[in-house]
Structure formats: C-alpha cells, structure tokens
Length: 161
Image (cartoon, rainbow, N blue to C red; front, side):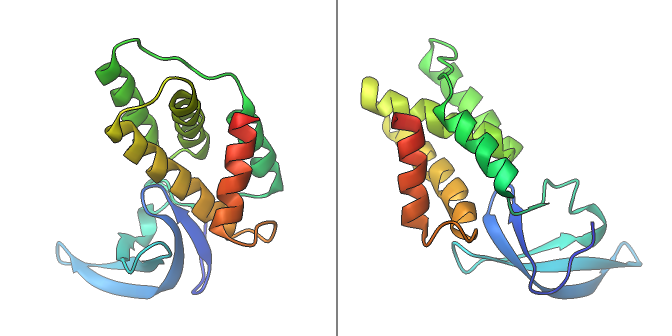
C-alpha cells in the first residue's frame, strides 16, 4: 500500500494518525525510508519504516462496510471469557495489543456490559476507556460522525441497546 503526505491512517496502538512526511535514515549502514506520522489524540510524532508499515498493523480508516461489521460486533453476544479476573484481563490485553478493530470492539462490548451488569475493576475501566477512545477516534474521522462524543454515543447505543 502506498501512502501520501496528508493521508489519514490508523495505527494499532495510537489510533488515528496523519502522514506528515517521509524521512531517510541510516539503518545499519543502509539508507531506510521512514514514514513520519502525527497522532491525532496527542502530540506524539511516530516514525516507522515505510517498508514494513503494513506488517505493524497500519491500515486505512474504516469504510461503511467495516462500520456495519463493527456495529454487529458491538451489539453481538458478550464473551464471558475466563472466570478468573486476571486471565480475563490478560485476554483483553491480548485483544488490545492485536490492533484488530473488531477485537478491540469485543473488549469495549464485554467491558461496557460488565460495567453496567456487575461492575468492573479500575484497571478494566481504564482499558475500557482506552479501547472506546481508539474506536471513537477513528469513527470521528469519518464523515458520518461530527465528533468523538457522537461516536462514543453511537458505540454505547450499540452495546447497551
């Protein structure tokens, strides 16, 4: 996949990023081309090798078909996961680390429902906030949503019905 300056992409851990430019750096004596990215949610500048940015999980913003699938995931049946809290938390961490939009949506769905049904721990609450922020930030970059708050409302409505 080729990218251009000004293009908006999604980083698996930092959410929505904008391609600010390209930079050539010396890597083990060889010139290597890097993408310079600016994260939308904070003032972070990220530099990643241009040759392997797809391998890192970088992707384009979701399209309407992905939004529909996301909506189905959010409104789907919750996965109770392991009964043990620490194993369940590790399972959520693994899904978050994958960078996969639909696995992150499963974390949001399961934790948001858990918060309303039985309560969740402070660590789970932070994870829920992070996961919901990643998804809402990407949705806010779509023309269907006016703001991140509107995207959060959309997410909550799908999960909680």
